[in-house]
Length: 158
Image 1 (spheres, rainbow, N blue to C red):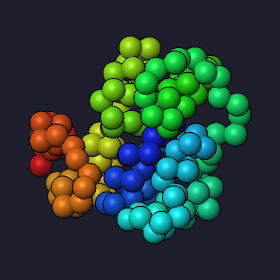
Image 2 (tube, rainbow, N blue to C red):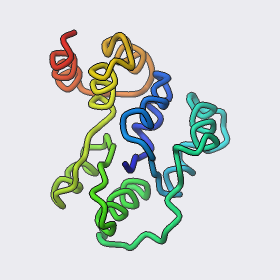
Image 3 (tube, helix red, strand yellow):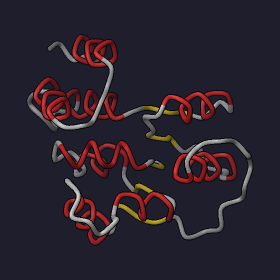
Image 4 (cartoon, rainbow, N blue to C red):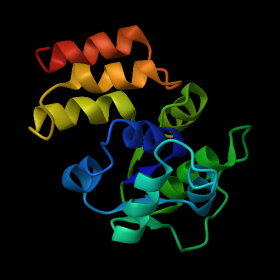
């Protein structure tokens, strides 16, 4: 599992980072993503993210990243996609930004977003209510389309 910054921040806001190792095992992020989510400015969720790195299940990708694509995405998205493209493993990407997801899908990479992780956490019994998690995100600056939220809520019976 390789995860971009936006899903990490969203899951930190809903206290859902702990779901990641329970759902997916070891989670990798490029160094560029770690720098983005831990800017040292006491941003919301930053303490939870620091704890996840300290716990060891959220790990910085230490191998060199082969540049397999040259496209106008942010550094974190580009690095996540390059890791997935250059690795013999079939890594699942967690990425929210539309452009990054489109590029990942163009290269036949598996990609899901924050909403899907919330839905999976509900299906696996890690949370009581996906709707409650979406409400927390809605009250913050984090945005997920109503269409996506309704699709996830319907899939989990809420």
